Image 1: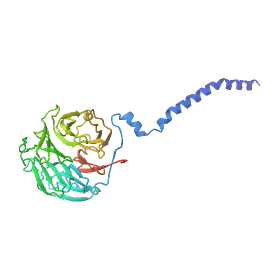
Image 2 (image 1 turned 135 degrees about the horizontal axis):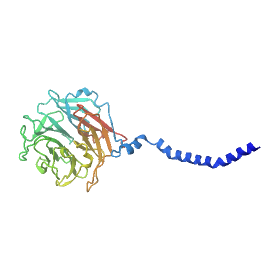
Image 3 (image 1 turned 90 degrees about the horizontal axis):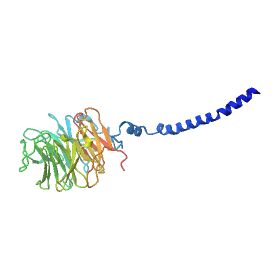
Amino acid sequence: MLRTSWIFVSVKQAKPLVVLIMIVSFLSLWILLPARFANPATAGYYVESPKLAKKNLYKLDPGWPRLPTFFTGQVFGVAVDPVADIVYVAQRGESVPKVLLFSEDGYLLQEWNTTTLEMPHGIFATNASPSPTVWVTDVGNGKYGHTIKQYTPHGKLLQTLGTPGIPGNDLNPLQFDQPAEVYVSNKGEMYIVDGDGGLNNRLIKLAQGFWIAWMKGGKGAGPSHFYIPHSVTEDTVGRIWVADRGNKRLQAFDSTSGEWLGYWTSCFTDDAPYSVRLTYDNKYFVVAQLNSNRIIFLPVPPIGNIGTCHIVDTIQLANDVKPHLVDVNRKTGSIYVAEIGAQQAQKFTPINRK
């Protein structure tokens, strides 16, 4: 009787402790369960990589091209004609085709075995009906270099801008010193970044008929100055963007007047921008960074003040791939990357394209 009574009293006295333990256990589960079932990638982003948001915009197409052995030289440039579904790849080397033509599906269509190209750097495909053409910058130091050449899609030379074999900085006639890249707008206006390590550091706009509309430049780090301007593109609100490689920044200009609109530097503290293009939906800049082996995506600012840049997604490539220049298929959204380290071009396709 005494024993039974003792047990009854002990349980009764312990009851508040049991309730307290149950409450603490419930609260612990309530706090820990969301972390247990959270998306690991999202959780990892906030903890480990707060500067690089992961939108997962693009993925590699491992089946492009069908046979990677087609690349026999250093791949320096790539251009897309979305109307004809042709991808042009420019490469350097002794006794190698200077330009390879691929289909959107990765089949080799043609090779240019032209002797008129010495050392191709940038390449741009226009799709103006009825006569699409291809522009190639030649940075060679021989008798064909320091020029910008226009070809038919089959590799026939149509015309040459600049004085072949003579580096210079004169505008009348046009003389270039290792011109890096050209961009031709839908209006037929041409933007030239000149040059890739030569004496000139300038951006030139040529109107239709190839007369000079305006020019910005001079070597330096101030507004409208450049140090190795390497790539150029236009956005949808009439701004020209230049990958100012040596100064590790993107500079923006008004396409009509050439007025300087500002520059971005905060996204390029680790590595310079080597190439700049717009995604098919015009929402992001696609920027190649050669030394860090990555492609980054930056939101395109609305009209007005360009503000500051921030990275919303990254494609991290393997070491020593060295992405040089990129281009975008405006119809399919695919991004093509010329990789001089890996000696190849790769294709990335948009994820969840609407």
